[in-house]
Length: 227
Image (cartoon, rainbow, N blue to C red):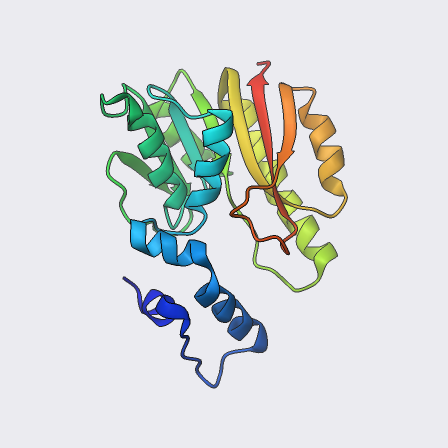
């Protein structure tokens, strides 16, 4: 357990004098967040694990035997959920594979292949393609940029990431595959949804219960890749 996690258990948070107001507010929010406590108790690397669990419980995009890629995978909460969902058949991953890609190191998750690097770079793309030449069933992205505090700027920053993730998905998905990505609401996500409808049979916004109500965060789920 990290020092930060120790600090927030039980709703008590120790602040250092140099912390900014926004950092203090974040730590207080974490301290009171039931999903943070639940993630620690159940051994998930992040509270975000519950968002993917909730989405998959309803939409069944991850199943045994699939090849799944998680972009911006660190700290690994989504990879843990993918592994659990794929193992539900009782035969390991059912012949499937899980890949986590990120520029920063991710804590090991058993049966997950981690590729360190920027997923937009050819070297990383070629490494993944060498591992799964027949391409993949699902591309996931819970990536978000460093926030500036300005809603418009943050919206445009995440849309840049979303568009890069979508470009990756359109190149790597098998027909009938699925793409799930995080988005901050701000206007451009509507145009993006319409663009994705050209490539997928069904495209919809989802707001999991585990996503904070005050957050502009939503997820766009695209299923039935047309190839």
